[in-house]
Image (cartoon, rainbow, N blue to C red; front, side, top):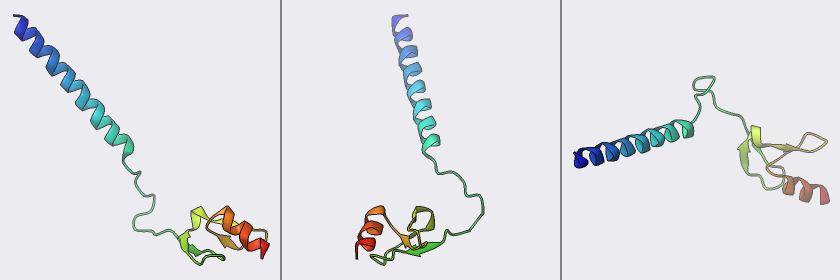
Length: 78
């Protein structure tokens, strides 16, 4: 009888751990795109000429695009 009780406890623990693991995977999944197949625009940094997504752009007062604040600062210093 004790063996059956321990087996039930072990199975319950395994079941709980698996359900938490699958919930964590669902939380880490990437959200679906709002428009299927649409690509984000890419911009070129005025300082280093590297291409980066437009959503990550840092602009100066003349609307020049930079990949980071540091490159915007360095470009303004020239």
